[in-house]
Image 1 (cartoon, rainbow over the protein chains, first blue to last red):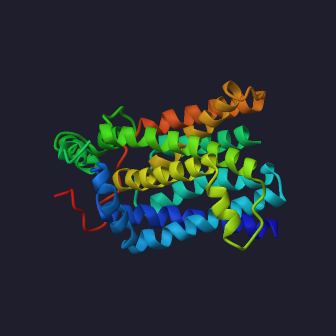
Image 2: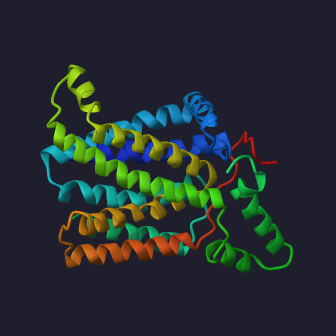
Length: 120
Length: 175
C-alpha cells in the first residue's frame, strides 16, 4: 500500500511535469499577464492536449501525497519527492533535450538532499 | 508586463548569445557560457519566479490552516467540500494555488524544466523560515543544514542559462 502510494506520487507527478513542459513549450512563451488575457490563456491551455493530460496527472499525484500523509508520516513521503528532483533532471536531458551542465546536476542533487533534510 | 516582445523571448536571448559566441570561438567556450555565466534573466521571468514561490508558500500555508479549522473531510457528498470553501482561509488558499498553477505553466513556457524545479524549491526554505519567525517553531540543526544545501543548489542552477530547450513546434512569439 505504502509503495503503491509512493509510485502514485512519483510517476504521475514526473509525467505531469514533462507533459506540462512539452505543452507549454508548444504553446509559445506566455508574456501577456493583463487580467483580460488570463481567461483566453486558460481557454487555450484547456485545448492543449499535453496540458489537458498533465493537469489531471498532477492532481493524482497531489491526492496520493495527501493520502500517504494521512496513513504514514512525513519521513516516508519526502524521500520520494526529493528523489524526483534528480529523476526529472535526467528526463529533462533525454526527453526534453535540455542542456544539463555540471551546475544543474550538482544543483539538483543539492536541492534534493536539502529538501530531504528540511522536511524530516 | 504586456506585449513587449523584447521582454518575452528567453529562447531568442539564448540563441543570440550562442550565435555570437559560435561565430568567434570554440565549442568549449560555448559550452562554458551555456554552463556558467551570470545571464540577464528577463524581467517577467523573474517576476513569475517570485510570484510562483510566494503563491506556493502562502497558498499551502493558508490551505492547511483553513482545513485544520474546518476539520477532516471524509465524505463523498459535495456539501462538506462546499462548506470548507466558505472558510476564508480555505478559499484564499485555493485562489493562491490557482495563481501558483498559472505562473508555473507560464514559467514552463519560457524556461527549462530542469531550471524551474530546482530554482522554485526555494519555497521549502521560505516555509521553514516562516515557521520559525511567524509561528516560532524551533528549527533543528538538520533543517538549517537542509536550508543551506537548498540555497547552495538554487544559486548554482540560477547561474545557468535559463532556456536551452529547442522550440518543439508552433510558437507564437518566436521567429
